[in-house]
Length: 283
Length: 264
Image (cartoon, rainbow over all chains, first blue to last red; front, side, top):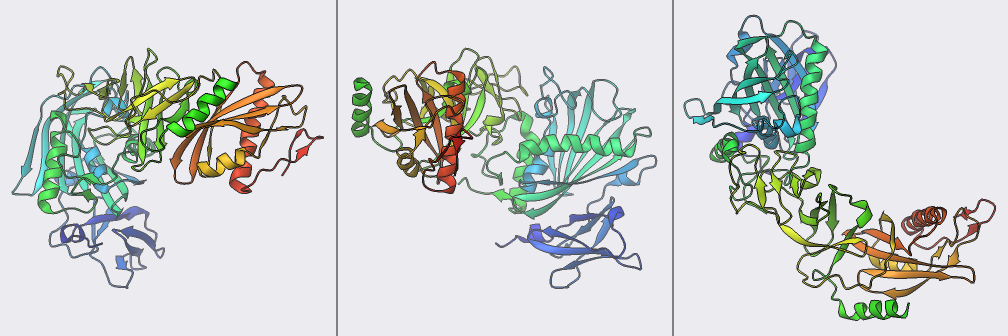
């Protein structure tokens, strides 16, 4: 199939930087093409395509980013990654048999918390999604959802009791979402969680979670396991949505007001021509 | 028995094959109150369905897809007379209409939101589904007891032929060799297999569900009130039947008296 330029010429995560061992190449598939990532003896990391040509490379947020095309823009910025006192946690990839776009959309959704992450990120009867604000910021070409609030029994590993949690969501690239949520130990500050997705094919992907938290007490393993537990609960949904591709035809699935972010995300994808992992017309 | 034969054979000629008919999808006993299951039917347009039983016992069948975000409804759960999607908890009544959206608890869902429904009837211990039939399933009342359902990787036509060659046990615990059985009645959805000796007589009613090409579900009922050890023997017989059908393509009926079981 032809992969549209907007999909080809973007950055995608291909490895976790810290886990690359010198002299031991790793291979991954990005949109059907096999890439090899190698940390050479001089500690330089290189990404090569199957034909031996060198691929673009960016090292940021603990991950190795590359492309099968020629990105004309730098990788998106996460200013919070540079803030003092945050702990950076790489949670590792989770393979999901679903469109990368379905995975991002699920990350933007809060209404499922009481049913999929029961007694952790949500619990009945606290199911109501209050109105929140969504905009496509044309100057930066990103989708933003702000003023999102939801009751959570255990908002994070560091949470000791239920609380109303404030959220913000940001979509800086079709296969990336970053959320900001109330930090339980520091109610005035935001914890930041990024979801970086590498499309293997239109219906298969690896999703990497990355966190920049204010949490000095939890051990690393517990933080990773908490995030993986949440994501595996999501995976049981994602692998059972029909169709696997994300429908961009508004007639195909019925949203409500709680889905305003998802509606904006789908509209934004369509406008950008990001059709990889999407279904344009109902089949 | 004469009545049974007459009805079944009448069914054979009158019942149109295809989408007009009723398809058996589960034995009543295997879908308990508040139970939810997936059923696939190989039709002109293959069907992927959710079948569920409400608290009051009513059975319903929908397309296995929540109209909100495409989640399979067979992962859902029953509360009262409604089926809830596991993803966002949207609730559907037995008519398929969406009755409640938890994200907006005070809103009455618009009448336009609903799951696509199918006719679903419980008849004589079996749950049947139809896309458009308005008559009840065209079957005699067998009054049997559910034995088990069994998925077999063979076409229905092959299985019907092989069932005519099988021997079925008439006693439990391998006390006696299985006896030859014959099909005494048959129609588009079902057949009755009977084995009679001087000592005993047994009938199995077998309903066929085409699941996907090359895969058939058998829903098996027996005449009622059989002893438990005979029911166990019959269940083993069903497994052997599957093994023979999938691996040999012919019936293996050799009886190992010392082991008290069939041997390939």
